[in-house]
Image (cartoon, rainbow, N blue to C red; front, side, top):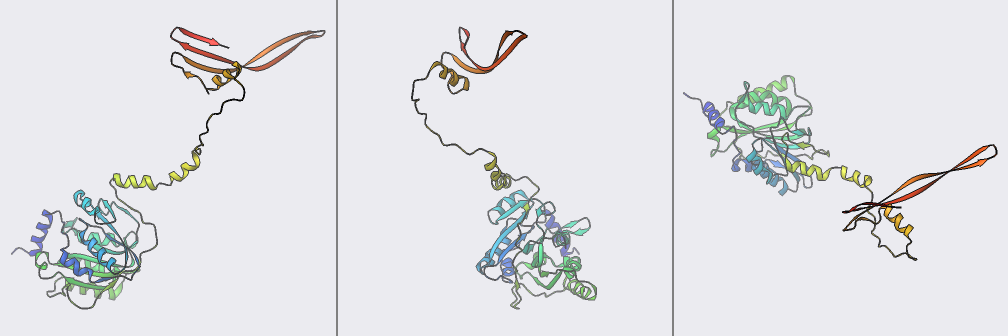
Length: 347
């Protein structure tokens, strides 16, 4: 007899492990989430797909008065492009390559690919990495929504038992549960890992749930909800490994170099109109103006170039005991005229 989990894995691999959360189930997930009005909350989906799941969660929290900013990571280009129209910030790469400020997010929706990686379920690898005590994305006290096939809970149990409080497990409704036996695990990130007998008891309880029939359904009216805390007041780095022209363009606009340029470049001068001289110009005045470059250049039929050089006049005066030498420095202006007929120098 072929196990349902094996058939589910084959179907998952055929789709690249991508299974968006059904809107009906995500709507029920949202009912488990609440936020205090005016709270600034950063939410993230490291496997965002087309962004629909996190968008639903964000809309729900906004309806309760939360100030929500959404962040999505999606490795597939087509889905990432669609995701950009629904979430505030999106990067196209794998979560392993994304440069993201750790512990900056109050809520993480994690619906990872359903397949195996190097002998371990991908769902477990994603959970371990993304809730890592040092580099994890979820803040201490942040809420996790973890969507996986029920049988994967056995492997995920040690991590969940060590890192999360207030754990609750629900299965999809009858409409969607038979397909992949999906469940949603809710939990609150602990500041310190749980150890000892308490961790062992929770771990065994979760493993038992991975085999149990008749799990509570997401639409169960049990009164369990999770308050999303305020996010840390930190500047969030959220960059992908793939060069994104839109991202680079935004970086250029926001670059602090523009402030530096204001001090490095001279201020624009006000344009003033030239006033006629009080007295008519003498030839010497014209020569100085040409030499300075104020007038001249291309004159149509000829090119007028002026230059000034320093020359030394040397005068020798005989005296009784020899001679006296007097050297006098003076500027000499030369105007060079370039014409089709030749080059002329005027002094």
